[in-house]
Image 1 (cartoon, rainbow, N blue to C red):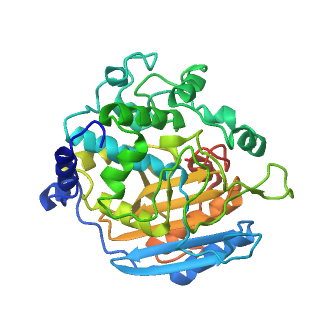
Image 2 (cartoon, rainbow, N blue to C red):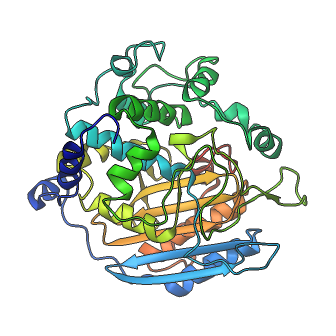
Length: 404
């Protein structure tokens, strides 16, 4: 392992996987009431609705206190007609941001990073303002313009222009810095992929490793995630996978097979590959305190308003569902794939869902209802429906790419 000795790596892995002390967790909030039984029929209906709205396939894996439910509808490959399976791998988009935040919070635990220190302390001269801190970038309060707004003003032409392109982190940051900042450092939440490109540079500087190695040594190997990969700049998904389809900008146009791509425009902000099973394992471990100290997890869960029923911590979303239950995780949108990965506050009920389509607000709105079915126990009209505003807050430009 470059930059760290084997002994240090082993020690860090052991420490990071210790369960959080119960007392520390109990100080944060009282125990949540027991969740109602998941509505599996409703979950199945949501997936069918997403397929009816234009997704080739949709699937969900629900782990409820160790009892696993797997549901899928539609196809993984439109050419062969192969059925979609929860065993298929896929691109997880901005769920990658949670992995990046975990690595940096582990570095906080190791005394190698200070959340409220300027980014320029670790990366001198990178940003034009020494007031932008690590906490600001992890909570989307840096004011750095989101360069992907320019790349994907039109989804299909924008994608084809970058499908095989390879960017450096600094090139992506330069694209952002062509624009004025959206706010002063520490201002209101404003989602920007630029923040987690900065996070990737911080990971590489402080670990002396590529982000792929940091993810593998600190998260993938300790949790024994067998379907999670960072292959950038390769364009292929290893093993068995679902093909991803980009909805055209013009209604009625043909779907674009977006499976093969570098995802270089996103990298540490959105380029990981995983599966529903690995995402359930990852989020459950995170909320149960197995990936960082109780103090670091508490910092990750310091919420700021993010619009509607959402709040944002450090690389982690909190959503209040129609029944009042809070769930924790992230959504992801990358060309061809919409991902939804959330868990309960105690990490004992986790849902990972996918539609192998993107750039479709109809599909995205339908798939958000998987959360109500999994955690509220009902998707009936008696529950509040997802609003257009909240759909736009979860995607990039109301249904296009960029992670949200």
